[in-house]
Image (cartoon, rainbow, N blue to C red; front, side, top):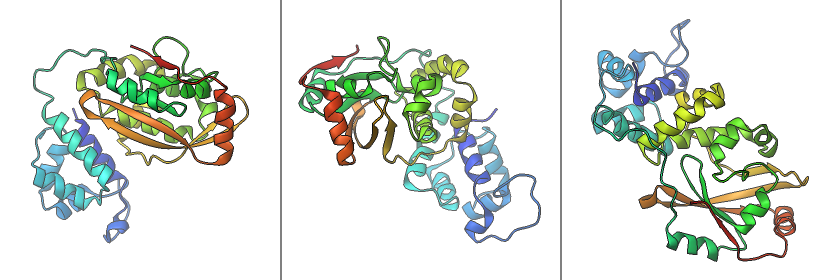
Length: 278
């Protein structure tokens, strides 16, 4: 049985073309990408050891080995960070862990006050599972009618993968789906991740599971919305990590004048309200 770490290394090996690393082609290959022998040679480790890592039989490679593999695969900083994270959780898989459980939904008063000060901006507090834990009135105005905020416990990841309206709302649905699937690896805790994936996977199907197994580190660009009002909205996103809470404060900044005007229309005359889900 493999591990997330082994799956990630194997996926990156399969996705790396030999010529990109200056290696010669050796005729037809049974699988795309690098041979194990190619990667092992570049990383300075044995093929047997690389095989053990990829197959999950070695769960604790040293930092030096991880760095060598990252160098050999030409990983970028975000991919290197994900490699280190997967090594951390893989190494602890055999330890006694709490049973899978839903994450805490509490948002600290200081964070709520910060969110209030961002009015009339479009902002929300979320966690890596996609729970929308608190939001400004402007966020609620912009997302009203999309289906995301229906119900008492809105969740962006569930919405993206199970609600057909999400494919209409997000102009770049594939990119948004990549982001939400990747974020599931980041918590807010291992037991929360397991609980949520087990709950979501049957409804989400291969669109989710394929992304989880691929470990594709997303390139988070501009967010484009086909709004139900007919407006085309473009937002830049600024994210403040609330590490001690395993939450994020995300601010959506209009990327052009047309979006700013549309947000003003959608927001209407109300100011200062704050919708919190606890």
